Structures are given as C-alpha cells and as structure tokens.
Length: 369
Length: 261
Ligand code: SF4
Ligand code: SF4
Ligand code: SF4
Ligand code: SF4
Ligand code: SF4
Image (tube, rainbow over the protein chains, first blue to last red):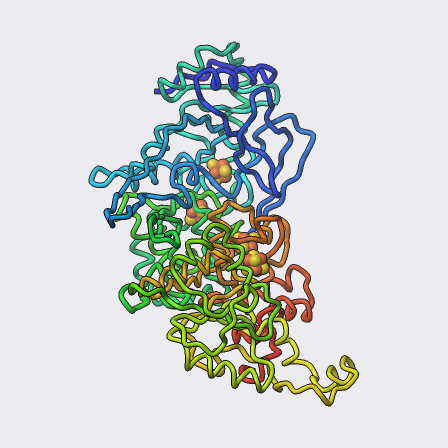
C-alpha cells in the first residue's frame, strides 16, 4: 500500500522534513555518536544530522569511524533499538502513601503521551517493535505504559546500505529493507533521499515537503544498493524455525562449552530489541509513609529470574544460556508465531566476550556433536 | 516495629571511615532515621556506648588485631542483628592485600619501633569470626543500600540480597559499554551490583569495588582481559584490590587468601 518511488528530497532540503515534524508537534530524536557508539539523542531545532559515520562491528567489538562521506545513514545500528523508548528500563508502576491515621492511598502512575519522531530507524528494529507489540499489547493484557509510549512514536525509517559484519537480518527476513511498520521510509542516495509514506500520519508530513520526481537512474541506484546490502551479509541462522531442532538438542555438549565462555552478564538480553523480561520490587522511604512499586529490565541470565520459593531452577550458566537460546529461537514460535530474533546482531557485538548466537545455534542443531 | 524505638549501633574496625558517611550523608533522611531509631553508639557522629545491647549493629572495617576479635565477639553477643558494611568488613578491604605479602618485612620497614605492633597474621572479614546476618558490599557502601537494609530490618523482613552484575545496572542506564566500544578492561561482568554502575556512568571501567557477583565467571573475563593486552600481573591486580578476602576474586587473582588457594 506504500506510495511508489516518486518523491525525491534533495539533501539540502532535508531540514524541511525536520521542520515539518517539529511543526507537527513532534520532538525529534536523531542518531549521534556518543561515548563511542550511535545513540538516539534529541536533535535541537535548526541542528543538522551527523554525516560520514561509519561503524565497524565484530563479536565483542564496536568502533566508530568518521569519514568524509556526505551521507547521514551509511552505518548499521547502535547499542539500542527502539526498546528503551517504549519499554522503559526502570519505571514506577504504582505508589502508595500512608497518612498519619494509617490510611493507605494507592496511585497508579501513567506514562505521559510525548509525540516523538525517531529519525533513522532500521528495518530490524521495526520488526522488533512489532514483536514487542505482540507481547505488550496482546488482547488479554495490555500494558498501558507501553501503549501510551508506543502511540507517541512517529517512525522515520531508513533502508540499510551499510550492514555491519554482525548483521544477519537477510537470513531472518527482517531487513535490510523495511516492508512495513514505518510512518516514513527513506532510501539514501549521495545527493538526497527517496521518501515514501507508510501511514496516513506519514502521508500528511510528506505532502508538505518540497520533493522532486525520482529519476530512473535514482530508482536503479536504490535497487542496486538494497541488493548489495542483502548480499554482503555473511552470518545467518540455519533455518527460520529452530524450535524442534533446539528442543531435540537440550543435552548437546555445546551448551557446556558456551557456558565456559559466557559471563552470565545479561548484556545480550539488555541490547536485544525483542527481549521483554522484567522484575518488580518496592522501594520506600525511611519514614514508612511512601513506597513505590518499580519494574526494571531483568534477564534469564540472572539468578532471580528462575528463583521460585526457595529454589533456583537455573543456577548455572549452561541452563541460563540454554533458556535464552531455546526461548529466543525456539519456543517464541509457539508463543508469538515467529522467532524472537530479527537478526540485528547486537547480542554478538555487545557481548563482552564475543559469543556469536549464529555460531552457537549452528553448532547445536547441526548433525554431528 | 514495637512502640519503643529500635536501638542501633555503628561500630568501626580497620577501615577508612568512608562507609559510615553513608549514614551521615543521608541528608533529610537523617531526621527520619532519628524518628525511627535510637542511635546508641556511633563514634564518628557522637554517641558513645560501645557495650550497650542493641537491635541492629552496623559494622565497618576488618579484623586486624587480637583485640579486634575480642571486641567483635562482644558486639555479636550484644546485638540482635549484625550487618557488615563495606568491602573491609565483608571482604577484607585494601588492608587484606597484606595477606599476600611478607608482613614482617613490611612492619620492619614501616615502623620505627616494630616491637609495639601486635597484629593478626591475616586480615579477616567479620564473618570469619562471628555469624553475620547481612552483608553490604562496596568501597564505600551508599546511602541507598543502608536505607534499604534499615527499612527491611525495622519491618521485620529479610533485606534484598543484591547479587546481580554491575552490567545490569549499566544497561538500565543506557551506558555505552566501555569494554566493547573502547576496549577498557571492565570488571562489571563479574562485580556485584549496588552502586548504580557509577564508574561506567562517568566513562570509565568498573574496578570491582563491590566484590564478586553471584555466578561470576572470572576465568572467562580474565581471558578477555588478556586479549585486551593486559599482562598476567595486571589481570591479577584487577581481581585483588579492594576485596582481597573475597574468595572468588582472590582465587581469580590466583594469589589466594591463605584459605582459598
Ligand atoms: S537475538 Fe541477537 S541478533 Fe537476534 S534480535 Fe536479539 S540481539 Fe538481535
Ligand atoms: S540487521 Fe539489517 S536492518 Fe538491522 S542494522 Fe543490520 S542491515 Fe540494517
Ligand atoms: S552471551 Fe555474552 S552478553 Fe550474553 S550473558 Fe553471556 S557473556 Fe553476557
Ligand atoms: S561498561 Fe562494564 S559494566 Fe557496563 S556493560 Fe560494559 S562490561 Fe558491563
Ligand atoms: S562501577 Fe565498579 S568500581 Fe565503580 S563504584 Fe561500582 S562496583 Fe565500584
């Protein structure tokens, strides 16, 4: 249902898009290099996007290089996708006050609507957001905090032209070009952007932009670069559905060898754009008049995650790593109808010891042990 | 708790006094604290009554002299709950570094009249001499930890044992990983949470002052440090600094505590 390739926004008119978004009531978050990685930061009005960023990712390593390229999006991804914007790493769900008579008052805390446009969202992260929607917005149990923030998002996606060595979205079917889930989608060329809308909200913004028609050479250049982005990826998963294969290999010796390397540190689950586990606790004041019920990101790599009334079910790293992989690539199919991995490669780069999910699962489901 | 206020004591052994500041730095909460409890003994803050019976004793510092052992046993007898605060009381502290050195040589070279020095062969965390009800880690501990323990004990519930890794707090704050993005030898993946990832929050690597987390894979992290071009000695120093008597860090530094090698 997207409009065909007919709108070209010259590079020096890109600021018109930012202005239109801000006129539309959105604050803009745009990619910036910060502490050695790409993160979404508030883009002050009149400011321009960073150019020439190039990213080198490998297992356990992430490096930024600044080149003289005029392009804004010639890189893959940063340590976080959209997850922190919708599923907060720490937030108060409700609080309680006790007055001098001992009377208690409970108050639910609500997330505030905050229209925000994210510039430069990748296809893998759109797929991950769709998965988080399935989890947090399922019909039986909607998470109002997530829902409010989700409704506030305006997503300006961009098709990837420079996947990292760790990206394997082509193999999971979630990239490197976006199919849906965006409000606006950009294809970046040296001299500007081909832009199309995926929603009515996107269409409204697009209508206001000073666009030119797309030349046939431009359309060809785009299809060439998209194909290159797909073909340059070397990592892959052995199959799109590994549920049966993984559960048939619960005693594979590889679980033990990966556990010798794994730090059980939860960096992988924290950067994974689809992981949704959390824990809840209460923090109160010393005068016993107030307390807050807080939830925060948890992980299957912690002890508390499998603690049930005196028993820690997954006490060692082997069982914790196995839980992560068999859920992410296995039982997620039964739960949500697809794998929980969108191929973003973050768990590979941001693992302090460089454990590679594609390598581990390939070893575990391959015939020889 | 009951209508009468709980009695609290804060004791000090070999230490720098820094953990006691977690009380003094409470700000307005100090007033709430005084409403809830009677501070019976807290030399750094004023009240002196070492021998009194109390509900909760907080103990800072490690055991270094024969007299310390005698005193901590007394404290145990007089206290309903004993909570250790900080790296010294819980895992030896910096002074436990002498456990792996030639103590006599040091005493001879440091003191003009070494014959007056009476110290134990090994610096000991408190739990090596008495039963400890709860241990707080960190060099130093912070006010949030103290407040949480006080609230729990006053409410009659077991305090939460924070034992996850610093990485968990680091990621919740969206710090960019210093090890992955800048190659710094961060101790976060084996170190116990509680500080709120203070060091990664100011752009540096964790140096492990909270001691070992649960299920810490020191061998794998040590291997990673070698790949980051730390030599054997530098890797050992990462593990054994503030928590020399933490068995997990001590054996990772493969210099032992005399009991754990
Ligand atoms: S499992 Fe790894 S590659 Fe897959 S979505 Fe999560 S972080 Fe990305
Ligand atoms: S995984 Fe695919 S969509 Fe995601 S950043 Fe890499 S190339 Fe782009
Ligand atoms: S796989 Fe890597 S990131 Fe995940 S818990 Fe293990 S060491 Fe940490
Ligand atoms: S900077 Fe240190 S604490 Fe933070 S995620 Fe990296 S290894 Fe863990
Ligand atoms: S980050 Fe590490 S060294 Fe720094 S305060 Fe926390 S535990 Fe101590």
